[in-house]
Image (tube, rainbow, N blue to C red; front, top):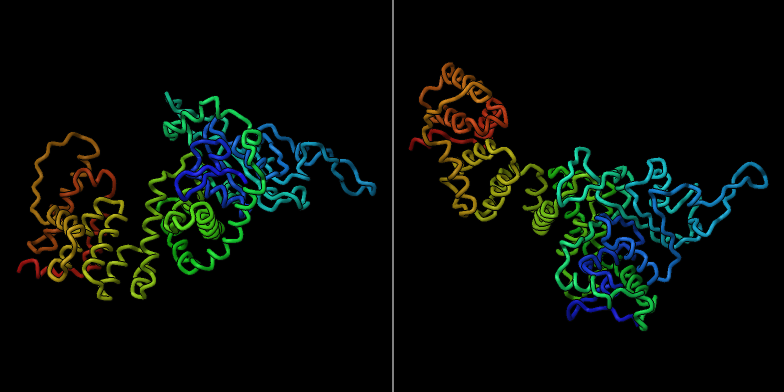
Length: 487
C-alpha cells in the first residue's frame, strides 16, 4: 500500500506523499474535489507547484491526462482535425494524441490568459463534460490554474508581482468551479517545508521513489470519501441548510454576493470536505472546521482582481455558525429570521430574551453598522431605552454608555476654520442652529449635541441632515421616553 505520510498521530497527508510541500492544509479540499469529480481552480503565483500537483495526482490515480496551456490553445488542439463526414452534412473529428476525446483528467493551465472566445468553448467542458455538443464519456476531472489577475489600475510595486496578462475570468465561468483555491507561496511555507522543497533528496520522480506506491490507494481514499458524502449530507442536512442560507445573506452584506447555484455548491462542498476530513483524520474532524474550509476555498471572487481577505470570510463563517447553532430554539429562529440586526434586537426584547442574549444581539447590531454617526445614534437610543430595565453585559453597556455620553454632554464649538468644505458644512449647521426652534427639551438638546458631535469628521463622510433624520427615526423606533431623562 502507498505509504501516506502522517502529519500527526491521526492525520495523513496526500500532498506530502506526492512530494508537494506546504499544501497539507488543502488535502481535504483536494480529496473532496476528486471524490465529487467537481471542477477545481487553483489561483496563485508562478512556480508554486500548481501544475506539478495536478500531474502527480493524475499519475497517482492512474488516469489519462491532457495538459493544455490555455493561453496558447486553439480549438483544434482540443477536438482534433475536423473533416466532412461521409454524408457531407456533418463534421467528424480525427483525434490527435493531444485531443480531449479519451481524456480522463483535463488540466487547463493559464486559464486567465485564454482568449474570450476559447473561454466560451471551455465552458461546456468544465460545466457539462461536453465539447462540440458531444458528451465526453471518459472525462472525470476538470481542473484549471491561473495567476492572480492584475487590477485595471495596477501600479508596479517593489516586491509585488503583477500579472498584467492575467485577466479576470468571466463570472459565469468562475461560478462553475465549486472549489476556488488560493495556493501557498514561499512566504506561507514553514521553515521545514522550505528545506524539504529545496533539498535535492526530494527532487525525484514520486512514482519511482516510493516502491510501495500503488494507484489503488489514492483511488480507495477517493472512493471511501465519495461513499461517505451521502451519509454526511443526511446527518447535517437541516442544520446545513440554515447555515448556508445565513452564509449567503452575510456574504451579500460583506459585498460578496453569490448566485443560487453557488449556495447549493457550498452545501455540497461542506459535506464533501467533512467526509474527506473524516477519511483522512478520523474522529478528529470537526464540522466547524469543515464548514470554514468550504467557505474559504469555495468563493468565485477568489479569482477576481481584488480577492476577499481570508479574515473577512472567516468572520462570516463564525457569525453564521453561531447563529445556525442557535436556531434549534424556536424563539431564536424567529429572531434570526430577521435580516436587519436592529430588528433582531427589537424582536428579542419583545420576546423577553434574557440580558445576556440581548447584549450579544446589541453588540452585533452596532458592529454591523458601518456609519460612525449611525452607531452613535443607535447606541444612544438603546442606552436610553434599556438603562432602567436591562442589566446588560459590560460588552454591551460600555459602547452604549460611550456613545450616549458623547451625545448627552453639552457641546460647545470653538474651532477656527479656513475656507473650504468644512467651513461650508459649518455655515450650514450654524444656519440650522439659528433657525431651529430648539427650546430646552431633552430631545432638542440631544439632536443639537448629535449634530455638533459629528463636526467635522462624521459630516465629511455623510450628509449631516440625512444622518439627523436617521437619528430621529432611531429614537422613535426605540420609543425613547425623554421625560424619564429629567428624573
